[in-house]
Image (cartoon, rainbow, N blue to C red; front, side, top):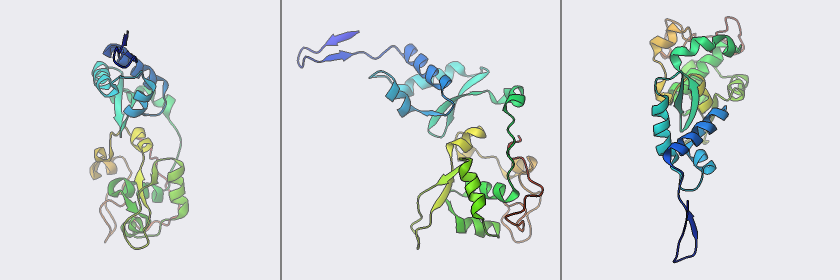
Length: 218
């Protein structure tokens, strides 16, 4: 409904009812393959809408359903409920194998971000090839972070929202512990002598591809 502002002669519009704002957000999230931030939602919605408040009601409405509205970093997406993921296994299996070097590099970045290449190499105990980093960048699982305020201003690496989204994490603080990682086969049961406990096989050569692990397995 439009109202006339008698003092300024401007036409002001009331925001749609909250239930309608929920429907708008639901429509955008359903049609989007990528998580959408509240800022992006409000940019699409009519003036005066409160995407944050509408999101709270929408998430409650989907709570316990087969499809849920999940938070991914600072954005939101509609995803299959975690306990029903097995139903989608045949449709979502994607064959992408990473070398152990890439898996270790990714794990170090996730747990130590923001981290420089030199720090990654110090933790792993071996050099990190450019190909390993490029592979993770191409997957869009890591990105460049801020440069460190140290001599040389080295660039840092951090994980992306795509990484969080793929593994069903709201933020990096939700990463599994070492016990869960070893149970998933992503880390060796015993770290090599003198290495940081997070590591797997510390003396694996960067270019070795034997014994590749499926990072996509639960």
